[in-house]
Amino acid sequence: MVRLLPLVILLACSSSGAVRDDDPPAAEAAPAQPAAEGDWAHMTEAQWRARLTPEEFDVLREEGTERAFTGEFHDHHAEGVYVCGGCGQPLYRSSTKFDSGTGWPSYYEAIEGAVETEVDHGLGMTRTEVHCSRCGGHLGHIFPDGPEPTGMRHCINSVSLDFVPASEAAALEANAAD
Ligand code: FE
Image (cartoon, rainbow, N blue to C red; front, top):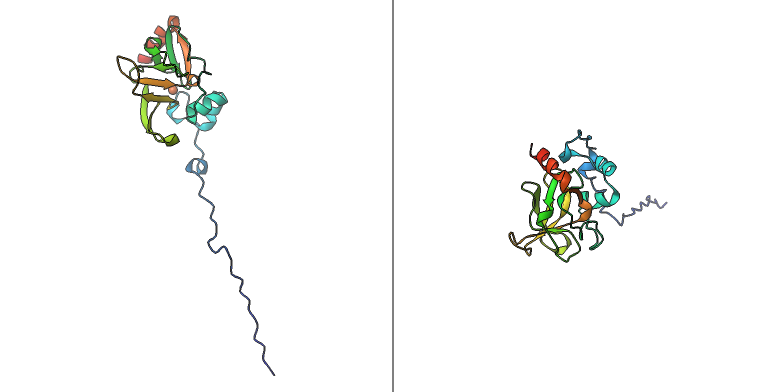
C-alpha cells in the first residue's frame, strides 16, 4: 500500500513586505490643550480656525499665498498701522509702505521686534519667510530688492493684515510698548 503523504501546499504571500500604517503625526496623537486667552504662541488649530476666516487660516497658519492684486491693501494708501490679522500686534507703519508693482502690500521695514524670519525652501526656492513675532502667523517673504533706506522688500499678504488708521494707531502702539 502506497502511503500518501499529506500534501502541504504553502502559499507564499506575494507581498511579503507587509505595508505598515505610518505613524500618525504627533499633533494628532496627542491633542493639544486649548491655550489661555492671549497665549498667542500656543493656540491650537481649533482655536485659530474659530478665530480666523478660511482665507486667513490658509495664509496665516498654513503659509498660503493670496493671488496678486486681489488683496485689500496692495493699493491702499491711508496713514496708519498695519497689524497682524491673527493677534493684532502692530507690524508695519504706512510710512514704510511703497508701491512695488507686485500686487502685494510691500514695506521696506517692520516695526522693531514685530516680525521674525526663517529660511523657507518651499516651491524649489530659497526665500526668507517672515512671520509675526507674537503669534507666529505667516505674513509673506522678504526680498533684497526694496528701496532705500533698507533695500529690503517685505512682500506681505493683505489677508495676514488688518489696518488701524492713524487716528487710532498712536494709542495702539503706546499700549503695545507697555
Ligand atoms: Fe500675530
